[in-house]
Length: 271
Length: 267
Image 1 (cartoon, rainbow over the protein chains, first blue to last red):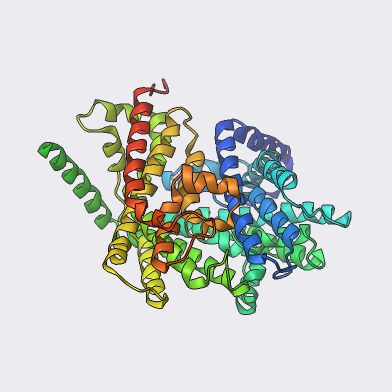
Image 2 (image 1 turned 120 degrees about the horizontal axis):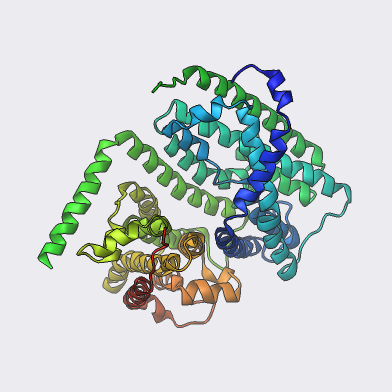
């Protein structure tokens, strides 16, 4: 990272354009979007079946009544692509191929540029991947809308923070390719583990107390469960959003530090 | 015929040797597969932390279904998951190369890579199956023993057939891979639970159109001597090998139809 805070300000106009480019880049793949959407709906139906079977005749389980459980599922299915749980590892590929030298050599802040692109992607997926599963849930199931108006504001903040946390983790995993030959394996492990640990598969509130406490010391709940809790109004939104904010800041800072030492490691061969 | 077998033996041998070269990579990816299977198991345990029964079935019953489904799925994953790259093969034009070679296209796609690491998930399924059998109260007979051996194999064949038929969509829709995921990886989740907990039309699709109910649910009912809460006759559990044969025929037909209608992407 060139320590060039002035360049950062002088070129500030490039980041909004990168956001727009991120949005447009993803809107090119419409068939992939529809295919992904259908998969989200099928898995959503299975998760609803599972949770409603757990709740059964009881009024609520682990704080979830039927409507809250349904809302949890469809919002979660919408968040998979929106938060980008399982994709966004192109930088690791560029590290392996060596193209990263070009990215880092450009007169921009690479982390900020990547974040801008990811926010554009987020905007596109918010419309195409978040709204449809939620609309499906609203149409066919008892849905729990927020009771307080302020919840909408908190949820918007929380969702944005979830994307930042997701970006922060993915950025670190991407940069791990500078040191690890096996970054691809690391990314696979993250891919298979993150869903359950983030509270996508079943609510983290279903786990025994001890496991829940351990999980809350990790960034995983900040990817999903925190935002889902804010929307279904499980207690005050402050602890959830605070947890997300803390992890977003920590992960983005860690990303900068790691990037700095990656740049020191980078050797560009002439020729 | 003999030359075909020899060709495949060589191809598969070279794929296996390639993995032996990258030991660390193999180990890490194997771990990922074991973790994937293990976390599905954790999900079931967490669910039963909050309830004692799921659709009238207890924890050990569900573990039996999960074991049967995951063991079968792991074997199918090993055999056919190369199909996940079909869209890419078509987009890049590499599929055209397979068409001019003197071997079947499906066999060639499947043997583009043989990833033994996928046995990780099968191993978790197998271990769970053993555990579930050891705690289940089953009155054994020769017939049931035979079913126990045949059911995971039939399950693997059913899963594989679903994979082939579903991935054929990529011939029309290059980006269609995720459509297929909903019935391949989706089936893996669906079959791990008693199917009576799911809504009626999802069940029609995932249990009977995609014949997932014959992978684990009906064989498990026979082993446990339970009657089907959905009211279908008990002998259905014995039919999974027949369903597997039928599914293979359908999948083969779909694949041949798709390849006949294939046009290159023109790039």
